[in-house]
Amino acid sequence: MIELSEQASTERFMTSRQMAWFRFRRNPAALIGATIVISVTMLAIFAPILSPSPQSAGSFVDFAHRHHPPSAEFWFGTDNVGRDIFTRVIFGYRISLSLVVGVLGFAVPFGVILGLLAGYFGGRTEFIIMRFTDVMLAIPPLAMALAITAVLSPSLVNAMIAITMLWWTWHTRLIFRIVKAQMSEDYVEAAKVAGASHAHIMFKELLPNCISAISVKISLDAGFVILFGAALSFLGLGVHPPTPDLGTMVSTGSEYLPEFWWEALMPGLAILYAILGFNLLGDGLRDMMDVEV
Picture 1 (cartoon, rainbow, N blue to C red):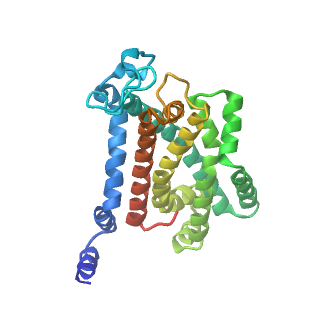
Picture 2: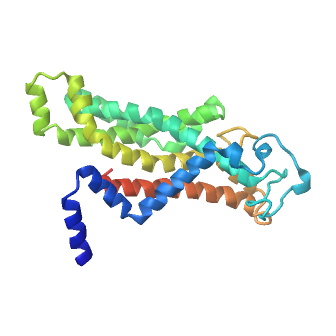
Picture 3: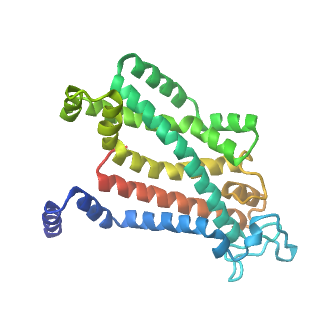
């Protein structure tokens, strides 16, 4: 009780931004998530410098160290042709984060704009946009992605296209719900009375009130995009070998289970590590900004 009263008294004299940061710092899970996300990002950016065997990221063969178990020399062991798995994992993070940037870089703006239009104009615009969104949501995401990548041939770009085709729908529904709730607020009515244009009201008045929810949603989505991309690669519809990709590494390593367990386990744990980081960070941001997504 004393700790709660002290926290309440501390928050009373803070600005909203300071209060949000205060809540974030007091959330251990959020700090762990932020640390994980930063570490994954740094590993991906500085992979050529941090990797013990950069040549293992390409068409490299070293049969003398084939199926070498985890050790001081090879932290994650080696694969079926002697490549260092740790090196391939941190280069694989580059592919995963590229997928996140590519998918969310298109899906978020597209979904947000559609949500703004549907929520602001209502009527026929709302009906067309939201019914189309409902139809797209009814399609199983993995089935759609499998169909698209199978037709376009496996590659990183086509995997991005496949995932993006359905990912915008969640952002459209989120923004639509927020905008509909905000339309009756005084600041929207004041902007209309002042003669503000539709574009001004949508992008200068309504959109800033959606930023918190969008930020939380992006953080949570990043982990799911990584998982979804790994699933496509596991099924052979992602990045072509020998480019290191976490899903492909798990798929290849599973052929040698259980004897050479590290070849599938280590890339799998790398996927888990990245997803856990983004989910914990997203939960922390949600508590910090006090929003529901």
